[in-house]
Image 1 (cartoon, rainbow, N blue to C red):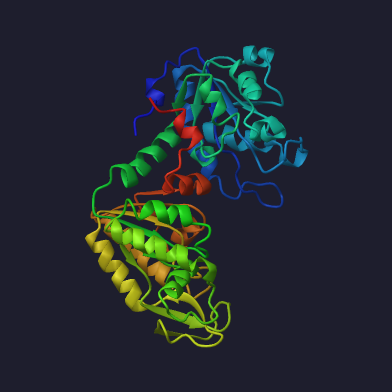
Image 2 (cartoon, helix red, strand yellow):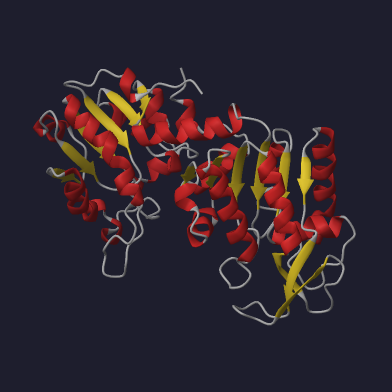
Length: 393
């Protein structure tokens, strides 16, 4: 993907409006429980400081629905960000000319929650122009917000020269490597509860992949479509025709679909519930399919051995509950092992994927893991992302 990068921008003496993602999780006492998103913004901010630019940070926090809410103020981020940067960070409730003039080259300022204005989520051109009037360039460094056509994450980039920040650059480079110009054969692993939430994703992937493994509750719908008994398992029976159409399109595109060949069932959806492994048509009565079986995992591993690129989205079973996390853990560890050995490029993201791979202890060895749920999914679906389109040359 050819896009404008930070290195292409003239920064010295410029005022840079930077869209970051400070929508971090917090504990009941207000402390940040996971500072991944904050840390992701640090390299770009430091690069701007070093280049002698004034840095104005734009972010949302929570869902205030266009109304100022003290509980959702971004003031809390100032201290932790200052510690991470090892320099002072200023804060203002409103972006004005005197405020910008007060900033010196190399200084950093956080603006109050952009979603305190309804115009933000409406994608208001007027709000974007108001923000743009106080800066020279726009830097998009929040891939997690790239799928939204919001004033501060996309529309502003239609007004000011727009560049990708370092976190955004890394994200775009890796996802391009995985689906736009991948090393073939390319394999996808898609799991999760429902087919209905991933119809566009599956339709796009079968046209681009060599192998597509489907797991989780959504696999039950495909098994049902093939005529297998899924007993009391989660299954969207009304999507039988959709599943058959996806399989037909996959065959036409020469994409091999891998579905479970054996399963783990239980009559209770609970950790350590009494369970058994069985064949596809051996689920009876109140049995629920909660994980893939050992032969399915073996076939997944064989497919990974033949692949050069792997894209992973979603767990293969009810990974939150032991022992129904087994197939997800084993397959993720094997993918990590191949990646570490230099035999596989592995990119993952979306929904429960990050949690599942961390649970498996495999996250650190994947080539890249995106924490941008919605944006990652829409990118995999083949949809244009407004916050990326503004960066293209």
